[in-house]
Length: 259
Length: 288
Image (cartoon, each protein chain N blue to C red):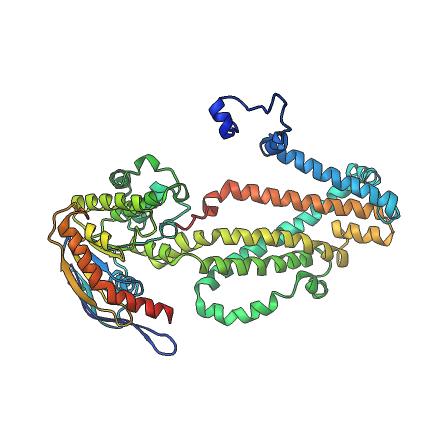
């Protein structure tokens, strides 16, 4: 589905250019959930922006279904952590979903059916006339999901979408996302710095090294049945292993942040 | 409103009394926040205080000729209102403000939206704008009179001038602050650059534009007066100027009160119209 080949991303900076990504190779299979896990500042978001087509790689190549990515495409929809700024606050729930249908020139006759379908899927159909400011944090993220699904993308790119939610709401969002994923079979690239979240959601976890010059240092296959219980010994062992794996990079990331 | 109860009251199920003696209670004061029509009462109180101190100042402390007492001013105002003199001056001043303000805002929004989007154009013109916006409408009066005479055109120009820079700077700021995430989200959903600009960036900038317009409206009220004092033969400013020449302090005070009232009423009308037509664009979503 998605393929990255030796992707480098360099940002101009003083006194010397900042190398965010230094040769990232990655292949995302059709219909899988790939979690990208790493310390803050490891270039996870940069990588996602490259996948979305918001940023062009400085070197290397990105392709989606064999076609090179040259910009934001209708097959890949990005999700943002701050739903407050990602949603359109002057449009109500229904109108937010309708936006994509309108700009993609979906025939008007189909709008009502599509909107109903996805609002029901995220359980927002009772709130269709509310504005984003009137919704809770979790509802706003569900609206983001419905709005994205309505344009029927093949890939969802999620940039720490639930990081700002409280722990209980976050758990509920994981269940919502997994259910939608099972029903729609979307390919999902999910960026997070939360090990438990990565284990709960992922088919595979890509571990990113601390920046600069980040790479995907390890890919872990999670051949564990869902739902995954963190109290389960196998899951707990995995959690500890990943934590140990990340420890040196977290220390490095902290050192860097402190200058 | 919920009943106020102390822990003791809750357990006893009725208000506690200390040794049969009624407690001195602050409840009436505390509950004032909930009195219906509290706003009206406070406004009335504020006006009453103002009139009272005005009366005291003019009769006991200063010369009543320099500060005519309120009743004297009202007595002067009534014939001015009945003869239509005030209304004529008010309407001519207001039409000047409205025309200048409307064109100034329109030009500033169009121009600001472009400058906010076209970085090169902005960087090229920004230094000039930064210098020119210190030329207040008052500073422009002498040259405006030479360019446009003392007729309506010079007043339109001056109000336009004052409005333009305020709304322009706010519009540019608003366009810049349209969240990147929102624009990218729109792009993912399939919007092209023009659609992102028209359907996302401009609505995102609306609160800033409206705020700029409100400030500009207040500033227009400030600048129409000197413009009319120095270069007009009608309007509230002209009334002030003429009364001053004739040492009619009563009439000066009538004009000053009129300006206060007009500014207040206009701001209310502006806010009402914004609430009616643009409410959905004015709601900021709290950052989650």
